[in-house]
Length: 169
Image 1 (cartoon, rainbow, N blue to C red):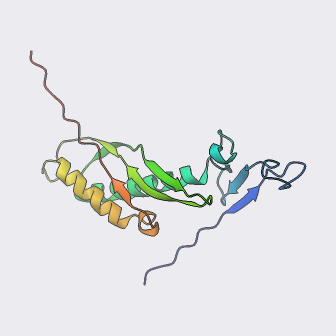
Image 2 (tube, rainbow, N blue to C red; image 1 turned 45 degrees about the vertical axis):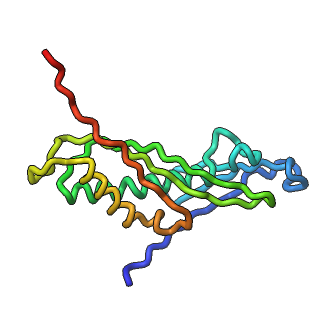
Image 3 (tube, rainbow, N blue to C red; image 1 turned 60 degrees about the vertical axis):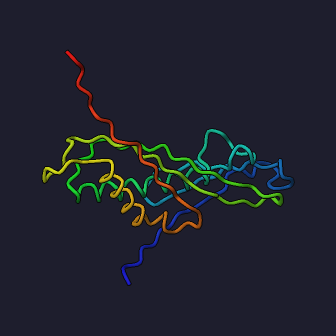
């Protein structure tokens, strides 16, 4: 068994207003998330559930956490494979179903990472192909702590590598 890591935060509701939870519409969903030594994160609920549109929601942060975790593992494993990545952009999306009684759950999250390379070859001179990049993504997915912890599918759909095309001339 490996080392145990512990993560702590303080979540403070700031939306009581004058009447607190006297009714469903009487209070704000605004809150603050404080992590030791870091800027305060302003949170709320999804605007569909009376949240503020200018704050972060738990659902957005869950999708973002999956993307961040995958990216960090991918960069580590790409480096180990000799692939020099100079840009990584992901536009993840998550779907959540709400049931008739109001409870709900995520049905899936899709990561769509796009990378740019310094060179079309690895440090050892092997070509960097879509298949090689896919295998690194697959390995990153198997290692991602967050993806391994959720009970819904997380799909990784990498954008194919862009190839430079020589113009006739």
